[in-house]
View 1 (cartoon, one colour):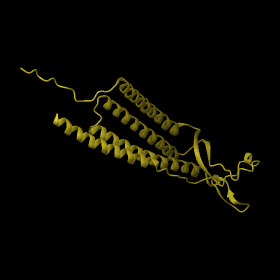
View 2: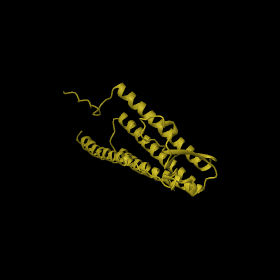
View 3: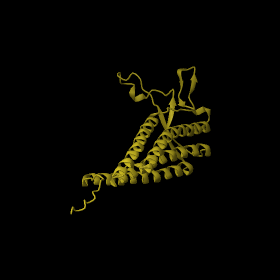
View 4: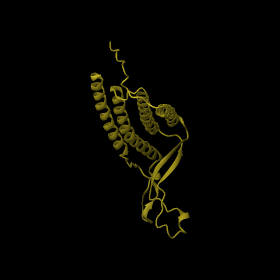
Length: 224
């Protein structure tokens, strides 16, 4: 009489090195998520409560040539592009915009890190595909797209509110004595970086691939 054929686990096995790498990735992703969340909370609190508040990245216009570059004939042009200000008695509107920018960035980093953590754990279980994984990737793509663009807009709007609060004398303008005009802050400056949209689109394609993989995984399991 033939002996019964033992059942064989169809799931692929991983080496110790693979498991260690995935475990380390999951741990690092968890730490990054925790750090981003904590840092975001602190940044929001600082933006709303710190007085004075230090803000970096105010765009300059008509900036003077730095004097230390004058002796160098090889330097044909030089200028400052931004300035850091420490301000007191800021209006609530500016504070909320800056706090919103910090919150959006922290949310995006935390969400993407949690997605990476979840992916590493599912691979460790040799079950990388599934609806939850696809949903997590789609959510991460949305967070990157929204966080990467909206944060830039909120940052520019917050700085514009600060400049408006300081008054017209702080902004750059025309000057008959200087053809290039007198230096000062830009009333509104937004140099929108569209790279986050490209990353989000690529992640969306990965999510679609995971959805197809999940379907193939179900079909394969049905044949076993």
